[in-house]
Image (cartoon, rainbow, N blue to C red; front, side, top):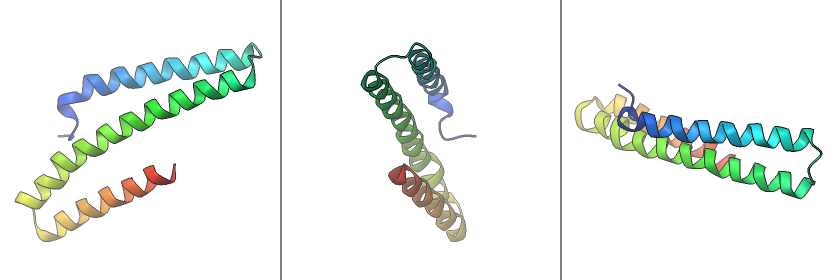
Length: 94
């Protein structure tokens, strides 16, 4: 089971909101909207995606990583920690 199972509906709602934001940005570009206004909306959509990512990461740490530490083998725990570390690195670089 995914670590975000309990909040799946919330994540999907947030992702649908981001999808709507991106469609709005596409319309803005199609309509030749002033570039700074488009960039403002791109920034808002980026922050919304980062918020979803942080929520998923928090749930991964709380469910998958902690579960592997408490009931898995040392190798499984190390693998889950390495996954989380790599995910954090990707988020920081983006």
